[in-house]
Image (cartoon, rainbow, N blue to C red):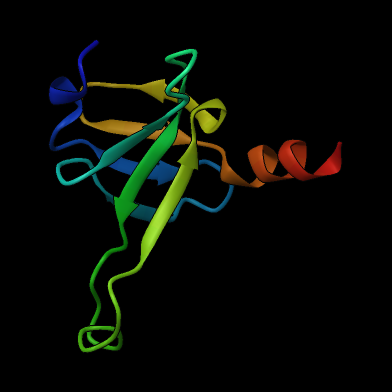
Length: 87
């Protein structure tokens, strides 16, 4: 799958059902030596309360991505962060 095929898909967190954003203006992080993808960087959804604030981002580790469907990307951020910081 190409990153361009992910454009327009909504990203949903499996743990709490939160909508994290829509893939469209995302960027990938990767290791320049090995070429391994590290994760997705999504701009945080705009709300009335953070409209005038700084642009915030959501970093989604590649290991947190569970399923990529026709319309949504399911991620499990809670378990991904626990695995990253428990070792």
